[in-house]
Image 1 (tube, rainbow, N blue to C red):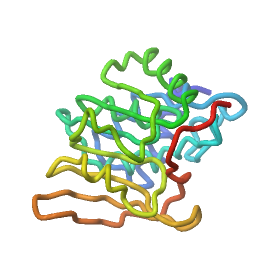
Image 2 (image 1 turned 90 degrees about the vertical axis):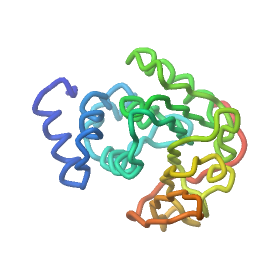
Image 3 (image 1 turned 45 degrees about the vertical axis):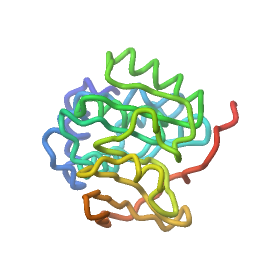
Length: 215
C-alpha cells in the first residue's frame, strides 16, 4: 500500500484533520511528502497509520498527527529559517522544507543523518541541511532562527536554543522529566521575554547530550 493510492491518501488526511490538523499549508505539505520512504523494514506496511513506529538507533518516527500538530503550532512562513533538533527519520524536516525558506536539522546519530540525507536528495529538497551534532546546543553558526522545533523531550526548554531564537520567533518543544508525563509547549519570544502555551500531552524520547554511538 502506498500513499499514491488515492483512498489511502484520503484516509491519511482525514485522520490528520480529525485530530486537529486544520492548517491548509500544513495539510498540503503532508499530502506532498509521502511517509512511506521514511519507514523501513517490517514496519513499512504501517507507514500510513497514525501511529509512532520504531526506526534505527533506538529512535521513533512520530505519529503523523503529532507531526502535523507540532508543525501547525510552529506557524512557519515561507521566509522563515527553521532549526529542527532531532532529525530522526527526516520526515518532520521534509515537511518543514515545503513550508520554510531554509531548514537546518541536527541529530546525534550519524546513521540517521546519512539515511535522511538520501531521502532528502531523492525528494529533491535542496533547502534542507542535515548535520551530525549535539542538538541540545543548537547551531550557533547559523543562528538566530525564526522557528525552532525539538523532537525529543527536555526537562525545560534548553537555554542555548532559546538564545538562538529571534525576537518574534517560536519554539515548539516537549517538556517533562519522565518518558510518561510530557507536555508539548510553544514558546514565543518577544523583546519583553518569553510566553509559554501548553498544547497537549505527548510522549517523546529524551533529549540527550553528546553524540550517539555508531551501531
